Length: 68
Image 1 (cartoon, rainbow, N blue to C red):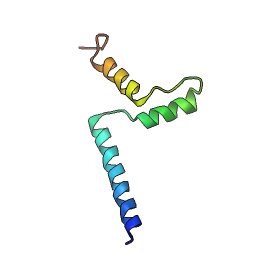
Image 2 (image 1 turned 180 degrees about the horizontal axis):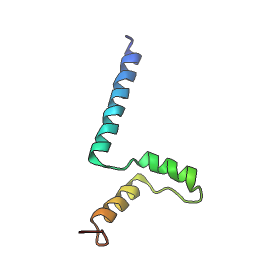
Image 3 (image 1 turned 30 degrees about the horizontal axis):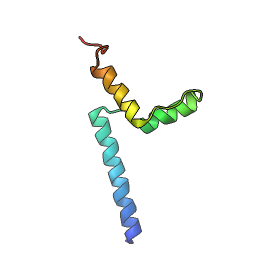
Image 4 (image 1 turned 45 degrees about the vertical axis):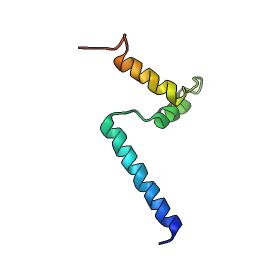
């Protein structure tokens, strides 16, 4: 196995583990959100990743969050 092939294998495994980790932690996928916006809402400007997660946290834990 060449170094490049081994490196590609390591990167693939890392991506799989990252995907699983995001699924377990219930974090939304920013890249998928941006892709959705570009395909379905071309008139909207996608937020930055920082803005995306800030809004997510505000909706979940902020003053206007839905609580039981």
